[in-house]
Image (cartoon, rainbow, N blue to C red; front, side, top):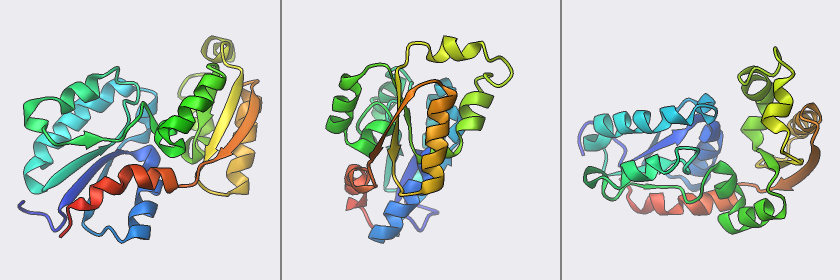
Length: 205
C-alpha cells in the first residue's frame, strides 16, 4: 500500500453514503476510506461498471483491500463479471441484487418480494429524493402519461426505512400517492446493513 493512510477502500453508491458513514462511525472503523459514485445512477446502471473499473484501475495499488458497496444494481451481471477478472481477485461486493436486499436482509427481502412481485421500493435516500429522481428524471412531471407506462404493473410501494423520521415517512406516503400505489412500511434500521459490511473490517491500520 502506498500513498494512503487507510487500508481499505469502499467504492459505493452515493445513495447509501449516509448509511455507510453511520455504520463506520458507530464501529470506529477508521481504517476505511469511502469513495462514492453518483446516486443518480440508480436510473442509469449502465454507467456503474465502467466507473468502478476506472476506480479499481486508479486506486488498486493504494489500498490493501477494496470492497464494492453495490449489489448487482441493474448491471445484469456485468459487475460480477468485472470482479471475476483475474486482476480483481479478492474484491467482493455486497450480497444481493440491490440496496433493498442488504438493508432488509437478503432472506427477508426475498419474502417481501415474493409476497407481491409488483412492488416498488423506497429507502430513506429514495424517499427524500423521490420527486427529483423518479418524477423528474424519468420525465413524469412533464409527461404524466409516462406514469402508467413505468408503474402500471406495480401494486404497492414498500418503504424500507433506515431512520425513524416523520418527514421521510410523509414523503414516502406522498410518493405512493403520486404513483397510485398502496403504501406499506417496514423499518429495517442499519443492523442488517452493518452485518453485511462487517467483513470489511478484517484489515485495519
